[in-house]
Length: 508
Image: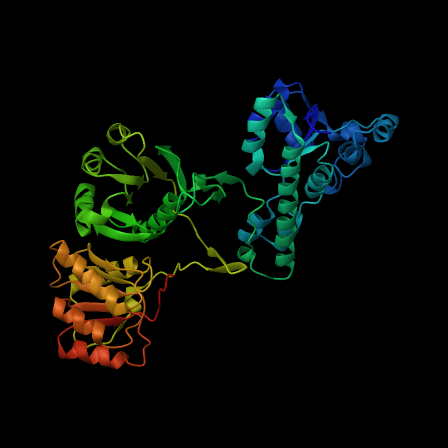
């Protein structure tokens, strides 16, 4: 009952991506391959011998492919216990035992997201595949199930090092993943039929888990669920940590705001941008981003919106950093950067969509729409007699993008498309502003003529008073305080401009 050698495998997958290495290992170990329709054709074209399911059942695929595997000759081979009475039944009816089931279901959720017609969506409800998964998972004492392509890597690691022999614990673990996946799949279907939002689902167990070195601190265990490779690819350095992944997430979502801008570089620490600048040349953008807070940049995460070149790489390499992210790296830049063996280089393949955010709470989860609101500055309300000049208005737009991604309470001070000071994660907005001003003064950065953005309204006029004394000339904020007029009147009396966006950006 413990270790079981795989001698036959039923393979029925929608997406053939990643399947070839699995077939190679199974064939190398002499495993009999059984398959259906397009999968059987794919296997045969790769040059591997394969037996078609219809040759076992005596029935072709019928009803436009709706019925292929639903037959006693298939499910008997999967569900039979490897005990004398069940084996005798298999022999009596000439049913081959099936030791392994590999499935990748019809992409129901993807079809819903693509806003396909209802007929197309209904046809992507997998019946046979889910049944195969559940049958194999039920009989985990004798059968191993690989329920989706997300689990190929784990299965291959086992198969390669054990001559296709699995332990009971391994089969039980795969069975658990299989039932988690079928539960998630059924949940997606019922949500669709009931007209509920697909993206509100919170299911981790069906995703591939990667163990991390530790969590936020060495005494905390941690794992990552999912596959980030569509968005990012690590090309150098030590494995990503829990904190690295959080900072990378903050970096790429912030940089998405500047994706279409000229060369832009940002430096992140504890999920906040402590330096960010846009310039005509990447090297200059890096110089200004670093100048925003060179002390905090130590050990930070750096992100660029354009290819990393050699000149900039040489400058970045002068400081200690944890992670460097860019859409691409020139060959010369890589030669410079890869000399630091532990430093992590990450290629940004695409900006993530990020439709939802999920956080654990007391005894459950909080799920919300991600704050993907894109400001149209022409819709801002100019609330003061004085309006910002062209440079100030450009900086206000820049500041509003920055503050949106800082932890609340948040203030961003910008001068000439460069962070000169931030206040983030403070318990009062006044403290956030004072901290931002102190940071600018500490680094000898120009407050005179700078602009200020706030993630939420000013409850009193104290913040604009402090900003005025520091030399700040223009302000953008959501508005909505019962005392907005006090702040507006102060700006009018002191030649400052203020714009109201109507949109708050709390980030806890």
